[in-house]
Image 1 (tube, rainbow, N blue to C red):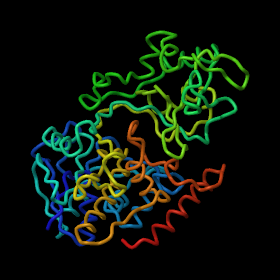
Image 2 (cartoon, rainbow, N blue to C red; image 1 turned 60 degrees about the vertical axis):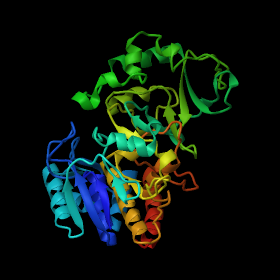
Image 3 (spheres, rainbow, N blue to C red; image 1 turned 90 degrees about the horizontal axis):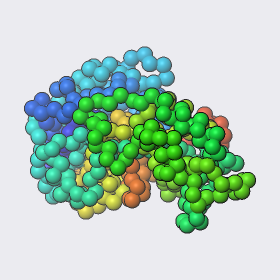
Length: 432
């Protein structure tokens, strides 16, 4: 029996490779070159369409640790990235064409992988299948994904607000509480006086936005998710009648009534991440850091995810998937890649790795491999399977979604090193 993998992006190729490594047969389906998404141009697999950089290397950050875990397990994507890398300082950048060609050649020359060309429009829930269609899933397969998941669980992710780590919020300036005392301490509030608000507003309306890219980033799709900078441009006080309204709140630090208040809402179960409420934005990342750090209490905020606005089809994974990326309702169906709510090329490949290993083991009658959130692989798979069902948003890997170390460590390098040591200990103990 062959396992079907739909989509030959980074997630699909990694899934197919891991399935083959486990000893199962794979049928990898790719609609190129018969049909291309708006973002893709090359007939090769694992095409990088946004950048030749696979972000930071080394274990000083979460994405670097994720790469190292994948190397340890034998990742196709990491093998080809390391073989085609080009100088980029502390980042892992690759020759895009060489990277895709090497992956394509390895996939096509693997005796356990059969490549099929064409668009899949039907999915049999009784067949072992990995759906790795990417954030621009074709119109032909979207109805099937809707059928499997339920239409209400399929989202078109057009806008998301930035997320900061709790430990980087200055609580000597911010305070907990809900408007009129309703909701307990659900929110963290960053109060502004008039002078602070006007300075913030002036910088916000002058800040530089990221470029839009045709159909992928069509500004007409944003509907109810108005960018905060657009709101600011509609008038000096518009934000104070919207997400920054100060009513119902008193600053306990000095008993004053704020002129404006920026609220942060808890974004994960253990309270290590907070979402800046109403701050959907299309500003460049550097501009977000510069302007949003003017908010009292966020001067030294660690942004674990910047606000983004783009077309991105994804499912409400916490309601649908387990932490091995299999469907709860249809256990033979697995998802992988950005459609699960992981953000970024490396994160997508990592989900393909976990899905591929486990669907093959399930087919072969072996026990699945569950990665805990003491590892980067597990932190992501646990985030997408146990996150907020009501407010689920795609996420890059970051230390805020890992299991806490159980101690407060101020030095970032020391902290990252401790995360890595704990992760490698667990990875090395697994039989995969």
